[in-house]
Length: 394
Image (cartoon, rainbow, N blue to C red):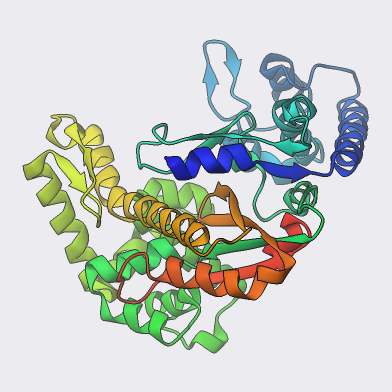
């Protein structure tokens, strides 16, 4: 935690002018979306009120409602996703929600959180996530959308001090590499060792096809199944995510487990062991109690099984990134470097590095991250450098 304290203390420089521009533009966009929603609904209403939104969508516009609870129609994300194609107003509401959440919980309060040094000092929490992952609050940096253009724009306001650059490094497919390691599944391991795209390789196996003939959708199905296995998703969960029938989802899962028998054996072994011990264990020996495995209710037990399997991957991932952070922090100090760790988000580390140290620090970071645990297939990292976080990450 000396590392985390040093990171909180360092903070990261924010281009407040750019951040202000982005916030203003998003606020304008929110107003445009509101006007468009009123136009499509034929009246003004409070978009943020589930009650009023439900009335507009399911009574006035007569869209097919999902669940109706005691308080009225559900308008949660799942319901909106299901009716997205039925009326133009739905994607407008979805975008409105995404942007208002970002503006209100994130961008709005941001200026007040920037210190006199022009840097944002976020709070890093060690013990909030049950998996052992680090999280950040005030503001929560995990809330910046990852792959969207919008997330990219927000990250572009996180900048390096003059004479420095930002170095972004993240583990490539770490949880699936851990799965290959703990299961000993040769097909997964070999795909990684050959440097193949793991989702394409999985799709080819599960669908029994030549990788060259796969469509983007088929790769996406494989990606969902890969992560579904890691995060312990049920056939129902997979069917919801992929918008297919539960039967079709089960067929995919069965095909996956048939093609990767060692993964199936690992899952069974992990559940049995955790049931006997009362806890699941990460690669580095950290334990997470899983009392749900001893429940009489089948659904509760199913949840416990998914937690136990998931913890091996996610818990080990969290441990490994912390080992790497400690090692990087120590080496930077030992070598008297001016570079310092400034942020950790998901599987990514962000460092602020003097321009003269870039190549040495890039090598040091790669070495310590790959060497954090002797995984087979080995850990792999992607490293990028830029004047701002978006550029470093691209």
